[in-house]
Amino acid sequence: MLKNLRTKIAIFFLVLGPGIITANVDNDAGGITTYSIAGAHFGYSLIWILIPTAVALILIQEMCNRLGVVTGKGLSDLIREHFGVKITFYLMLGVFVTNFGNILAEFAGVAAGGQVLGLTPYIAVPVAAALVWLLVVKGTYRSVEKVFLGACLFYVCYIITGFLAHPNWGDVKASLYPPPIRLELGYVITLIGVVGTTIAPWMQFYQQASVAEKGIKVEEYRYSRLDTIIGGIVVTAVAFFIILACGSTIFREGIHVDTAAQAAIALKPLAGKYASYLFAFGLLNASLFAASILPLSTAYSVCEGMGWETGMDRRFIEAPQFYGLYSLLILFGSIPMLIPGISLIKVMLISQVVNGVVLPFVLVFILLVINKRDIMGDFVNSRAFNLVAWLIVALLIGLDLILLASLLGWVG
Image (cartoon, rainbow, N blue to C red; front, side, top):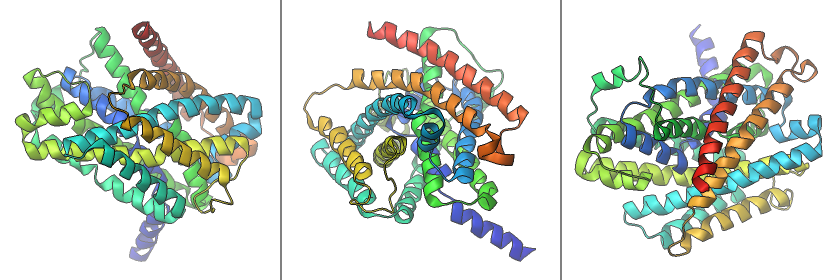
């Protein structure tokens, strides 16, 4: 019995990676900023939304994980094969635009986190760009995955910061049930932002491509599913502690912040310099981490969709479009951060609008493919799973329409 348990643990650690890495990267510069604002502006009152969002995230990523295990193919591959090149092209165009906006945000996070820690952007950004480029171009899937898993460990910074902020646990518990729902515009937009930053289109493409490249077998599916579930729980816990830290200090003192970097600075006199530095280091690590993954996810998505060779185990000459696109995304995502006084607010805003438009389409394609018995066999969704999944899609479409209308009104 003990030997059997050891075997199961060994198999789990062999398949560990795609689920946990994808989920943790979701706590990127944009995510940390959103959670910081949620806590700083509304205290603990938005913590409750993390629970249904975590459930939705796990269900969606589990489907992608299952598709990757059973078919051995990436999501873009499957969409192209079953819906044609034309539809795939327009979907990839939307994914490319929103991902590039997010890549800009990641390098902005590198610059901001570095500044709080005393590093000039003219050093932090070029060094970060060079590191993430070398990591992927010179590494293999296995070596890169080990680095990514190591980066996941640094998210503990936010958990420690949450405790250093000395939260009122009684108030935290009271904020969960009944949920303190408010109808004011700022609250609703932030709530939608929390949901939107937790479930993004790039995640589905990256996790499925990662599962396919890792070569996880059908017999290992249940262990891979556990990897996905743990990832969803961990990313939610980190988001919880970010909201907790800012709600316990910045909100309580009535300080207004608009970015994660401002939140890190504001924490210094309220929770101590260690809390501030940990928060800033967490932002730098998360931005650097996501600055590796998001260009990689984009390269996977576009190249799979176009039928080009992909994969970190291939050499540059074997997959020139894959590595070429990855390199260009790193280059053009980092250069704008070196322009003095540049404002990327509208670029990021547009990327989030496109993100909201693209996500429901991606989810619909996932549900259509995963319910094809000729592809999935006995691994198709159950009726109950489909009911919940389509309900999630409907709710996300509704939230995205509200966010889209609000953002377009803001732009105007």
